[in-house]
Image 1 (cartoon, helix red, strand yellow):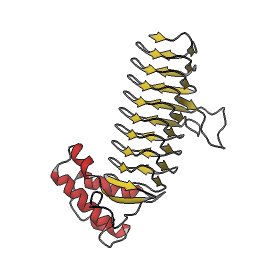
Image 2: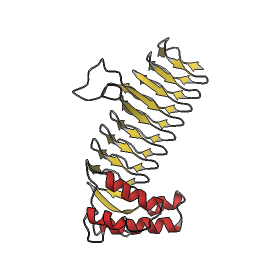
Image 3: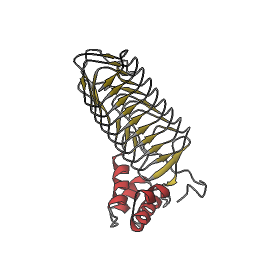
Image 4: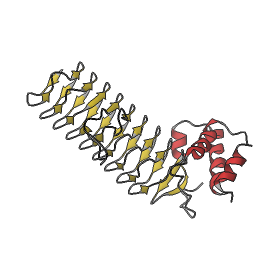
Length: 267
């Protein structure tokens, strides 16, 4: 363990072996930091925060601050859980849950670039990349292997599906179905073909995902009709995942397809 003499660590905090704590960082009483983690300078970890092993936390990061929720009461017991092998770069802010007993969660092997804000009760799964200055409001769900382009914003209570690719400087208030490319304001532009290939999807699964996309967005059917039609087709697991996501997107609904997309983004 290597703790800089200017770091302030509450004696009740749990610090694992081979942890490095940089200058002027502040670690609160209810913090738990797993082994082999690096905490750089001027980091603040407060409240009930559990951080797994092998994480890198850059200069000026704040984890566990109270949520930006006018209904929040300081006496509420809420927390943050962060998994293993994450990179959280400079000046990110991650707020703890808002409702009593609730949690903000970050899984494993995620990369949060400079200035990302993760609001209260967000859940980020695994192998997600969130580029500089993205803003996630409360209760945003981000599934595995999504990529969120820099400067993008995400409204509260929305859901970003698996392997979604978001163009930078975009804004969303509706759910983004898995395997899609999304851009601008609440617009879907097509299938993330490159992402599917890199993730090892079979040619058959890729074609079925394209067929599912066309059925939902380009068949002339409304969403209910498309879902009824999909139920009669023997799709494999990934295409079925696509339709299950759409079925469950009831609170916000899904982003519409923007016709006339460029060849790179189209189906």
